[in-house]
Length: 280
Image 1 (tube, rainbow, N blue to C red):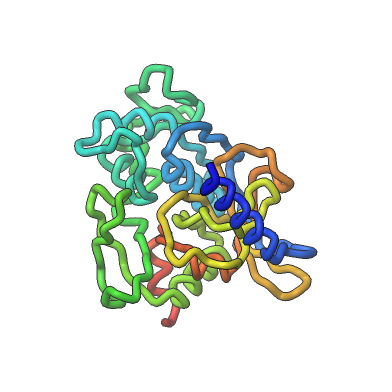
Image 2 (tube, rainbow, N blue to C red):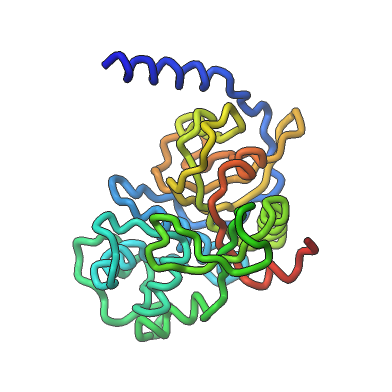
């Protein structure tokens, strides 16, 4: 009990050192589907990656709203899946390309039967046909930054959630941030995966900012990046769409500083064409 009280006190003191954003102004805000609540589910990676695909299509003028419940149910059929069903953004890509996907209205909860066909705008698709229409093979790529691995090469990170042994492109962190910013400015959504265990991550108040670091980066959570912002002090932020419901000051969105991004990003998943449009 004493250890717990001491830890709580330390975390409180660390939290008090956090510099909160002041006068945040949105610079870019992409279109996105409604914020959802994953509740006790551990498939944040599916919420974030499907949201990224949805934003990609909406920004092209093609309205798409996909079923996370379908992806979560399909995980029961995936070999080697952990009981928690934890994964990464690229796990969602792999699942829908192998098993397909359906629109949100076709399967809103995991309790209802899986549809056998997908229907949209009066057209009927097989599940795989519909999946290919919203996510072409190899359309997305995962990026990471690990100083201990060779840059500009595909690396298989040994993270617990990478149980599929997916390979990601390893880049310097400043390049990864540059590509992510370019993606948002050019109208592409991004799926972010990173550490939300720091005192500077404050969902209740709607921000994640640099603070005192605990010395390591853990793979905790995924969110979709849907915009860019700055505050009166010139600090830059990514606007994040979370999957913890809408009960925070920004209706489920939050502001994650560039400093937090550079310290606590595990990976991002975005349109492959973007890695060729940024000079590193």
